[in-house]
Amino acid sequence: MNRTTLSLIAGATALAAVTGFAAVSAPDPEAAGQRTGAAATLPVERTGLLCPRPSTSDLAETTYTSFTPVTEGADDKGTAVLRSAAQQTAPEEDAEGEDEKDGEDASSDEESEKDEKGDKDAAKDDKGGKPVLQLKEPGKPVAAEADGADAPALVGTADGRFASGWTAQQTTEVTAGTGRGLQGVACSAADTQFWFPGASTADSRTDYIHLTNPDDSAAVVDIELYGKDGELETTVGEGITVKPRSAEPVLLSTLTAAKQTDVTVHVVVRSGRVGAAVQALDDETGGDWLPASADPSGRLVLPGIPEDAKAVRLVAFTPGDADVDLKVRLAAPSGLITPAGNETLHLKGGMTGAFDLGELTRGEAGSLVLTAPDGSVPVVAAVRVLRGEEGKQESAFIPAARPIETRATALDNTAKGTTLSVTAPEGGAEIEVTASAGTKGGTPQTKTYSIKPGTTQDVEAPVPAGLKGSYALTVETRSGGPVYASRTLAATEGGVPYFTVQPLPDDRGMVAVPDASEDLSVLQR
Image (cartoon, rainbow, N blue to C red; front, top):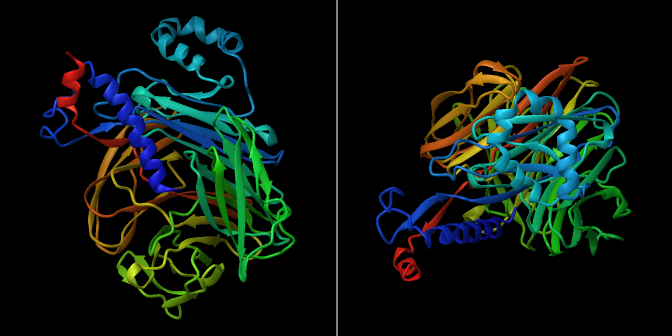
């Protein structure tokens, strides 16, 4: 995602909210841990997330999960609501639907309903349909299930006590057909530019780019495709209109006549903003979601390649005209190593390059570290990973990730089948990992870990005591770094190792706000 754009949006949102409050009561510099005149670090007060449509398969079973960690200094009120992007119910109709659906619960939980009335009324004032998921309290995740091809794309907002660190995830299991396996994706914020190396227009693949518009006006989007010889000619890739508060899946193979195994997708929003993710489905090796790569950079980290990966295929692209020789290293448990035969990879400017790295991890946790000479040539990248034996393989994708600057969360974890992989490619780091309460019960647990410089570790993540349901894992950096992390969910069905991998980007739940006490004192007069 475009880091600068999001930072400006987050900063502007927080400044507006905090300045409005401070006009009545300026922040206490000592309480914020800052001296007068310095920037105070405060929780963001409003944020949004978008979840793409999970599947077109009637056999799909999807779980949506939503969570906000407990954040010191956050407001004591607020809401976090995810609604179907396709529903446009008026607030009055929404109220009737909720009353009818929750009639029995209302009689048994009358007092609880009264306590939450303010938050629910605020949620009804937001545009959209009846809530699919609504948080009740920070620190406790909630989940909802949907079956078949009718599971919707979701549009959501969080404010007040739920905004800082709000995270949502959808996990889908498809038992047969194209893309069978486990498919997971973290819901993301809207933006104006995305890069997806690792997509395909080959006959064996069915790849969709899902575009979700959260706003009240239409968004106009251009989709550019780059193959092994440069930009592909597209027929209808320009000026795609995404209607207000709706989701639009676009089949990549309908945009071009070229059939190529490895394609880089560039999404550019002309007007408005959208959420974007690629759903990559294969006839033989299942499928998964391909999230956007980190912004083009001369140094990339692709964290958490499974230790039992049978095949790793790296797809990379540089937007400029200059060629680049990428230095390749693997951050393993023992430190940084150079894979034999793949010390450097030559990437031509403006052309998608694909490189088979084989059984790269060889039974140990690992993360790829790619470096351009002097960091002068920006690159985007992702790897496609296969697990399992021939004929019973499943695939997943790991894009280049952003570091965890302060905190990040992965959702829908289970007591078995969850792997948390953490890498510190430059300097050592200390992290704190908290397992939240479960969706149906359990007591949070916290552990601290030391990550050695240049290594990747699959840490033994904590599990809530008395766990019922699924839970959230929140990773916080305490010292050192930078730190990158990913979470793998795995299960075996019919001898096929279903799995999905999600990198953990920083949740950007905190923002530095300059102390404006002197100016605000003028407003208070």
